[in-house]
Amino acid sequence: MEPWAILVILLLILGISTPFWATVGLLRRVGEWQNKSSPEYLALLQRHTVRPDQVAVLIAAHNEELVISETIASAVTLVPPSNIHVISDGSTDATAAIAAAAGVNCLELFPNRGKAGALAAGIGHFDLAANYEVVLLLDADTRLSPDYLETGLPLFAAPDVVAVAGHAVSLPASGGHGLLGRILLGYRERLYAAVQVLIKYGQASERANVVNIVPGFASMYRTRILSEVEVDAPGLLIEDFNMTFEVHAKKLGRIEFHPSAATAYTQDPDNLGEYVRQVRRWSLGFWQTVRRHGVRRGRFWTVLLIHIVELISASLVLILAVPIVILSQLTDVSLLRPTDLLIGVVLPDFLLTLFAAVVLRRPALLLLGLAFPLIRIFDAVVCLVTLVQAWTRSTTGVWVSPTRRLQPAEQGS
Image (tube, rainbow, N blue to C red; front, side, top):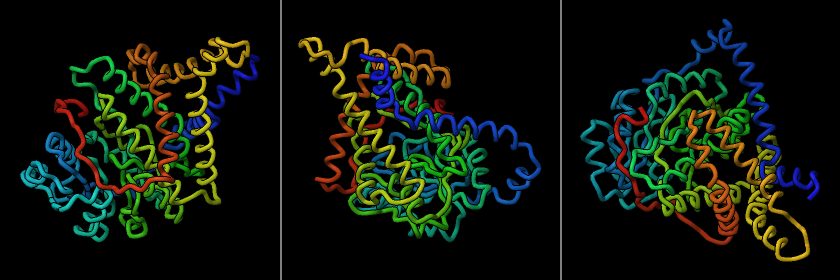
């Protein structure tokens, strides 16, 4: 294959978004180094930074007795127990009892409404918009870093910032994981590093403001916009994509993100069954939100359209590349050679792994990364299948009890 053809494959796999937003992020970082000690910036922080006592923590939980205690404990170190609100959504285990014993506010819902319904109920029942400046949406398996608010609240210094996306870090493996479990956890570590550092950091720059998700695992919103955001939109499997799209569609303000701020640790799947369910839920939730909002005029929607095109094209290439190589080997038609696959697909994928290994200081990822292209192919299949399902099937947000694992208390702290 000609070099230009390999370049085309590279562009289809990586797209133009990753190098473009990585460059924007680098320029943003340079600007921050120059401005962080300026008197104007320090004065801005003093005038507009939200205080911890003005933050409400809202946790929607469904049968989370294995993890809810540690999640509440991490939040209590940052805000008073009276600021923490747990919504036990149809739980049949000890979730509500654990929350009550911890001295936090607890609302029990029956029947199961789903996460979005639970969040909406909690916002209304506790009147969070009237009593707090900011609400921190927290998953029941998430642990906040000790400096979550210390680093995250200054991002609200600019008055036009209405949401701060949390920086996701995968909880470290607690031992007992087989090879597949380590591969899945390592792949998720790479995903977080690549997306957050190479893409989202640039997208959150002041002049861009095109972040497409404020993840619901541990992110913050100004409460004054909650009345304008349809938290519990019907027909959606997850809520965080929709809430983010609502901010852009209604021009409510700017979304901030910084890879060194608002860090929280989340428990990622370590087995294939849970991984499949999570990836399907995320992917279907994205496509459902795209279907609900469509693509409109404006900077965010243009970037979203480019992302969609790249997502579909990369998925098709990943799925078809190996069959085409095999077909080329079995016939006289030389469409794609094994070396083309190596240079155009495997090598750029491994470069992402190398980047993550350096950023995270995790050299073990280099060995695990040899299996990552196979997971990417699986993700590509899920992406295209859920694309069809988003337009052909209806869903509710009612959730099924997740499978959690006990995590040593010292990890993630």
